[in-house]
Image (tube, rainbow over all chains, first blue to last red; front, top):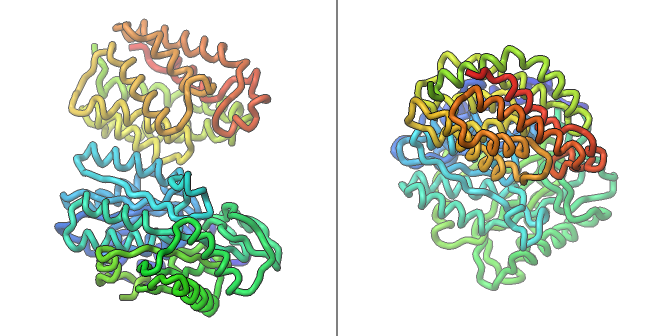
Length: 331
Length: 202
C-alpha cells in the first residue's frame, strides 16, 4: 500500500477534519462519534435533506453538503455503511418541523440502517422518508431494476432534492421530484485499475494491465465483462450502448450528462469521453442541455470513469440549474 | 408486578454480568460457520446497553428504543442490527406506556419476530434464532407469571435447538456450508437459549 496517510484506523476522521478546515464556512463535524458532517449554518423553515453512506467516494456523500444541497450526512468507514446513530443525528439536525428526506444509495447496509434511523425519528415525531438511488444499469437487469446499485446518479438526485427543498417544496413534493430524478437517471462505469482500502492494505481486485471492466461498481463489484482496452471512443460506444439499451433515446429528448472520474483518471481523459458521448448522443437526436465533467463520485484511487444520463423535463432542469453553494458543484 | 423499564434494566444488568463466557462460546460456534463475530457483538452490545440503563426513561417504548440505539452503536453486524430491530418493534408497540402486562410479552416478541423477518429476509425453518423465538412465543402465550414464563421459554428454546441440530442452515453465511451445518448447533439459536437462561425470573 502506497498512500499519503497516517493510521488507517483514523483515516476517515482525519480526512473529515481536513474537509472542515478547508471549507470552514460550509462543513462542520458533529455527532457523538464525529461521524455526522453538517452545514455550519443550519437552514431554517424548509424540508431537511440528508444522506449517508460509506466513505472513500468524495465528493459522494458528505461533500454534497451545502446550500441547495444536503443539510447533513452520516459518514461510515471506507466502503462500509455508517451505523444508524449518525443517520439519526443527521435527521435530527436537518429537521426544522417540515420533515426530512433521506437520499440513500442502494446498498443493503445503508438501506437497513436508514430504515432504522427513520423509525427512530418517528418515535421523536419527526417525519423522515427515504428515496433510493439505483442508477447503475450494469448491476441488475431492467426487470430487477430495484436491485441496482446507486452510483453517480446520487449527485443529480441530491442536487434536485436540495434545490426543491430550498424552493419551499413540502416533504412529499421533495420526495416525489427526487424519485423522478432517480427514475430518470442511468449510469454505467468502466474500471481500468483497482483501489486499496486503507484498513485492508491490499488492492480490492486485480485487473490486467491491458484490460478494462465495463460496469464495475464503485467498490469493485463485478461488472458486465472484461475485455482488452480499446480506444476511448470504442469504450464510450460500449458504455452508451448499455445505457441506451436500458432506456432508448428518442429524437428531441433533453438530457443532462455527467462524465465522472473514479479518482485515478486524468481530467483530460474525461474530456475525451465527453467529446465522444456528446457526438454519439446528438447523432440520435438527444439534446444535451447540461454538461458536467470531473470527479463527482469516486472510488479512492481507482482509474476509470462513469457516464450518467438524466432525462430532463422543465421541472428537473429548473432545479438542476438553481443556484447552490457547495465546494463540489460550480453554478 | 408488571413489565416496566425496571424489568428491562434488571434484565440487561443480569445478562451483562454473565455475557463474557456466553460471548466466548458463541464466538467459537460462529467461527465454524460464520465470521466469528457473534460473541463480540453480544459482549459489546450488552456492555453498552448496561452503560446507559441509568438514563432509561420510564416510557417503556422509549426505554426499548434507547436499548436499540445502544446496541447499534457498537455493532454493524447483522445480529446486532436484528437485535436492535426487535427492540424497536417492541418499543413502537409500547410507546407512551409505563407498564405492560406480562401476558403481553409473547405478543411483543411476535412483533419483534415479524420485524426481524421483514428486515433480515430469513424465514421460519431456515435454522436461525427466529425458529427459537417462534418456539418461545408458542410456549409462553397465555402465561401470566414471569417465573413460569421463563421456565417455559427456556425449555422451548432448548427443544428448538435440539430439533434443528440435524437440519441445514438455509440463510446467511452458514448457508454456503449448508451440508457442513448439519449436526451443528446454530450459533443464533444457542444465543437465544443462553439469553433466556440468563434472564432474571422476577
